[in-house]
Image 1 (spheres, rainbow, N blue to C red):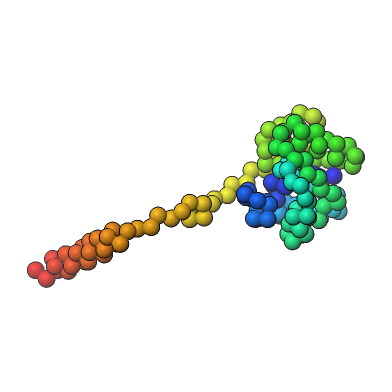
Image 2: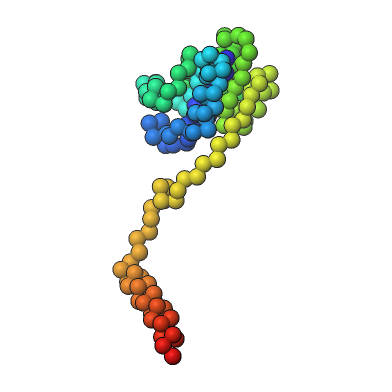
Length: 159
């Protein structure tokens, strides 16, 4: 069985419903899902009272796992122990994928083949910070400066 941490499948976000699927993580999931005949699981490190939103996210994005589990903490040792329990119950070949180096280190130290998934992503500045409004005076000054520069360009051509 292969266990994915939810963070491999979704980009970071403030709340679960707003998390966008990560294209590379989803590609990795689909490729391995096909080759393992669906013997895959998802664990969620974040705490949540109701798993309905997680189930909905997984369904909408086509992530069909034979099981999922909510660990409820980002503590690497606790996550690693939960992964070990899941893989011990499943038996056979196993592997773990995560974006957290500390958790991957813990799972690797306990003898579980693990892969650290590094997913670079860029948040556009206008999405994360408020755009400063330019004052009317600065706009008028900029228009005047450009008009003067344009007329000076033509001024030298007339001589």
